[in-house]
Length: 402
Image 1 (tube, rainbow, N blue to C red):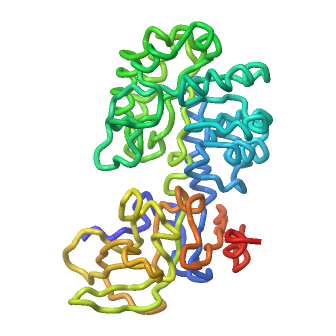
Image 2: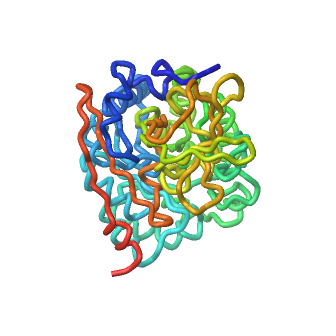
Image 3: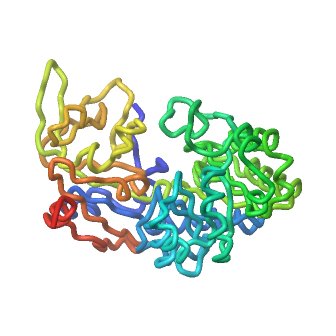
């Protein structure tokens, strides 16, 4: 059996501790963000930037726990935002860094405020570049356009594939040729592409070749190229040499500054989600452990991606062991995390510890069914736990009315 242990990357930050003793003291459910693992990821990214001259941004859509921005600002060039509020958060909480923003479409009633926070503004269409670009240029902002190289390298995650047929993300070369004019092109400082999701650098190499094929004649006129996110740079098996080759090739071929905007790589394996078993029920021979945590509310990517998160001391492969289906307490029939094998049977009160829970959790969770939002805790290098948030009934109620 492949039971997860603290030797696995998702739980390696706990290798110096007895996880049950350390985290069993917390009221559950609770998110725990491992500050030392964040530091280690930041050091990897900073070293990449030093070796290549690229600039690495934090994609806040994956990780936006700003209590850790002072730490991350030591290693990153700034933040990337998906809209007005994230741009403001980046400006306020990492003020010394650059603030980049890309949005599928900007609102006219928000754009003036956005100009207060953003340094780089990337548009998703030639239409919006024409509509808002002159205002951005007059405000001294650096402007870009997202392009779609029509090169899909993903399998099984169509919802996250920006190059899927009919995608709304980025300008294809056909649309560029039809809609771009000389005056609009003069507004542009750089191009942006984002096509990857949890992928290695071989897929970036493939994508970069497609970008060159489609837009290679445009790039020599640009000052920068943003290669987006989805790069699992801090994963143990990530091919850094190929990534660095892609960066240097772009720098040398087109004379551009290269930006990367990973989110997951910044906080990969830097968080845990602590839960407890409330009850165990049986249906047709299936043992079902109902947790005080919900996939739908607290780990939305489990259902949206979908994927099965790692659990300390459990295995996702059927075989020897005690098989349990883990599910949430909500009324959603599909609020199921998945089936796991445990060395010993689960019982009410047992601790269940999920790994790699710093990303796409605290920034995506919700209060469906009136489920409370879990508090967020910091684990520091000395093994101290500090509560960063305290959520309650008012946080649920105030989302719904006055």
